[in-house]
Structures are given as C-alpha cells and as structure tokens.
Amino acid sequence: IEDKPIEKKKKVRKLKVSATEDFNAKLQKRGIVYISRVPPRMTPSKVKTLLSDFGTITRVYLVEEDKTKRKKRRKAGGSGGKRYTEGWVEFESKKRAKEAGEALNMSRITNHKGSPHYDDFWNIKFLKGFKWSHLTEKVAYERRVREQKLRVEMMEVRRENASYIAQVEAGKKLDHIEERQRRRQDKQGGGNKDAGQEAKRRKIKQKKPFEGDKKAGVSLFI
Image 1 (cartoon, rainbow, N blue to C red):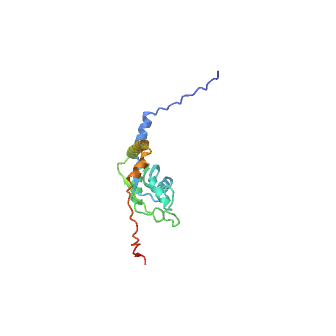
Image 2: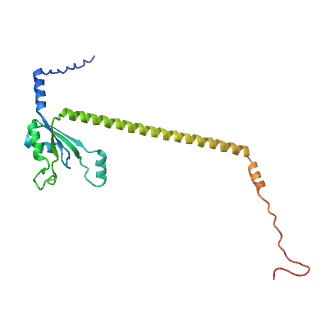
C-alpha cells in the first residue's frame, strides 16, 4: 500500500482589529480621478507613470473598448491593438488627486514632439466623495447586465433555431405525403392513363383538295 502524502493545511492569518482600522483609515484618505477619454496607445502602466509625478498611485483601472469596434477597425485596415475608452486612477492622497485633476485637465499629455501622445490632451477630473468600492460595484453591475443580455440573445437564437428545424421537419412530412399520394395515383391509373389521354384527343377531319372538273378539263392549277 502506497503512503499518500499528507497535505498540510494552510494557515489563515487573522488580522488584528488595529490593523484593519489602520487600513480603513488609509482608504478614507485616498482620492480618485476620472479620465473621460483614453487616447490610442495609452496603457494602464503609461497612465500610472505619467500621473505618478503628482503622488503615489495605488490603483489604475481602464475600460477596454468593445471587441466589435476593434474587429471593424482591423477589417478597415486600422490598428488591431488594444484600446481603452475611459479610466479611473486612485491616489494615496485626496489632496494629490485633486491637484492632479486641476493641473492636468485640458493640458497636453506630453511635450515631447516625437511622442504619439503629443497632440492628445488630458480629460481628467477629481471625483469628490467617490470611493473605489463604488467603482467595483459599477463594474459588477455592468457585468451582470452584459451576462443577462447575452443569455437573452442566446435564448432568442435557440428559439429561432428550434422554429426553423420544426418548419423543415413539417416540410419534409408534407413532401412525403405528396409523394405517397402521387405513387398511389400512378398505381390506380395504370395503363388506362395513356388510353384516356388518347381518347381525349380531338379528331379533326381533313377535306380533300379541290382538283377541278376532270371531264371538262378545267383545273385550278394553271
């Protein structure tokens, strides 16, 4: 009998009350800015690097664009790279987040002419009273709405597919019935069919051509 290895249970570290209170206090001090437009080629790491000049950034979340738009752009010959539509950035300090929102809004993203973001401007705003938990609730709600919409679409597709299959089966049954009726008629009609058609044909009597009076030697042909 082989000895099975004994799995060691992982120890769950319990947080002290003081540690949780300190963490909650830090969360209360954090501030969030909202980016209403994310230019092409901008990534979460770039956003964090550019905004880190104003203070410590704890979290960054950017919303990816719809996959259908990306496919259409790729088919049209455009870039197939990942793009983002909007985003949220969390600073460790509310004061730093507010300063970043006031200083960067409607300003150039970079002053380097060789950068792809030289002609792009920040659209950024400090969100007073907004917490990261609000964002997670919003994302979870949108995910549930998306999943519900997808389920409804799948149910509609299945319903249409079932209806189409039912129509095909009904058509096959009707074709089978018509084929049976045609064969039955052929068997019952048999050889009388051709005779009946022949009898129905009209007989037209043809008149003999007029040749004139032979005795008188008169003819229609000169």
